[in-house]
Length: 386
Image 1 (cartoon, rainbow, N blue to C red):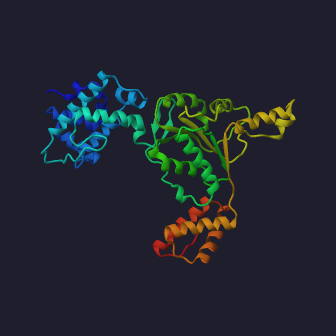
Image 2: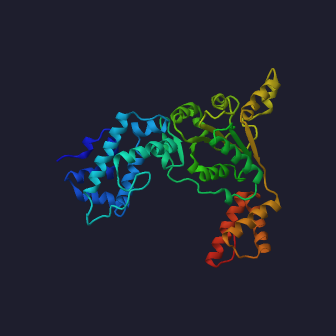
Image 3: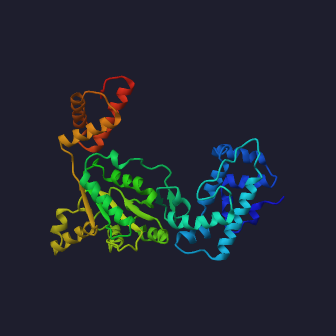
């Protein structure tokens, strides 16, 4: 029996998805029960068209990559893609009236009439604005040495949840807005003590500006030699990418020092770049310095200058300082208000201070941990104890 996949010219890669393959096989008169199994397993029995549109939308193919790269697809490619959509939509209509499922509705940018030509034209603009493939759905990625791997679950922290540090957050946000607006921007180094919200600030900005085209590629300091390869992978993508290196520190003779310096060259862009490098560190000067470096160097001044030159290559350096008692308790109070914690504030602050002392110091992270504990205890109706 004829399987419509064999008629596809551009979207044939969809057969790599188990649900789509079972859909094509069912339409060809093959094992329909396997199709039902896949539909139920995907939770698409009441919205199969929406899931089908999602699969089409996120497929990486010549059409989606051409449009995302800012080029107008040739008439041949556009027609071939529209024909594929017609074939797939026609197959989907054969399922109308199936008692085991509900087709539901198509989702934008697909039109409700499932017109192949119209949907293809809509997708030209969509891909140009939103990228292609996994970049449409996922916020963050890692790099495995050859390709980008989506991170399914990322931090959900929002800017409003990060209390105080208004000046620091504004510096970071203004720089990211410049980046997204094709204005001159700077690579960023966020440094300060543990738990002050450096990484959380970056993730909060990602969550705020995801719909504006911001994505993150997280790489470890061990993989910094791959920065040029990562840049090349996303060079033709219309989205904006932050290469994020968390908890960065290096030894003087580490080969990755030179690699990162090269990646940071020309840290202020005039809008032609779609990659920003952002790093967090507990140290202002990323390259570790020792007294032996000075003692064993013929020109100690030059040696020290070389060590400092890496952090100097970040165009924007933002310090997240340790919180004092009043600021720490201010954060606790704001978090308690957000959570609706009813404990008397004086009692709550006394417990929060004891918490900080037993946990090794005051910080926004300690404040959040305490507020979570207080909320959980209140909900369970037990005293706040630790």
